[in-house]
Image (tube, rainbow, N blue to C red):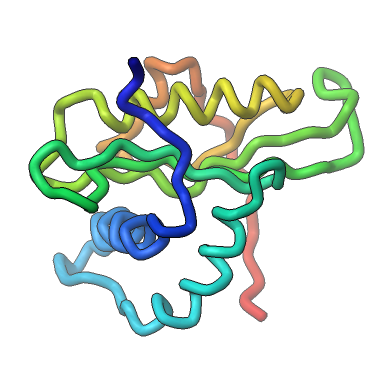
Amino acid sequence: MSLVRRALPEDAMEVLRLRQVMIDSLWSAGGGGPTDWHAESLPTLRERLAEPDGDFVAFVVDHPDRPRALAALAVGTLEYRIGKAGNPHGRVGHVFSVATDPDARRRGYARACMEELLAWFRERGAGHVLLNASAEAEPLYASLGFTRDPDPSMRLLL
C-alpha cells in the first residue's frame, strides 16, 4: 500500500503550510516569506482540490507522528500549449510545489509524491514536465530523469 494519496479539500491548510515551507527555504536572508496571502488563497485551493478531473493536483503523505498534518507534498498542473515536435498534443506538466516538513525529511516522501505526480502527468498525455529546482532539490529531480534546460524565461508581475 502506498503512503501517497491525493490531497483533499480538507488538506488545504496543510498544503499551504508545506508550500510556505518550500517558499521559506528559497529565501536567502534566512527569514521566512510573507504569509498574509494564505487566507485569500485558501478558498480557491479548496475548490481546486475538490475537482477530481481537473488540471490541478496535489499528492501528499500524511505525517507519521502528527495526526492531521502532512509530511510531504508534490503539486502540479497540466497545461495546453500548441503542439510541436516531441509534444504534438501540446500537453505540458508543471511542478510548482514540492516540500517536506523539516522533521520528516530523508524518508523518501518527496520522491514518492513526485513519482505519483509524474504518473498522473503520463496518464493525461503530457509530452514533458517543467519545474524550477533549488540546488538542494536538484539531485532528486535528476534521479527522476529531469535535466537542466537553458532557461530563457521572463516574468511580468500584474
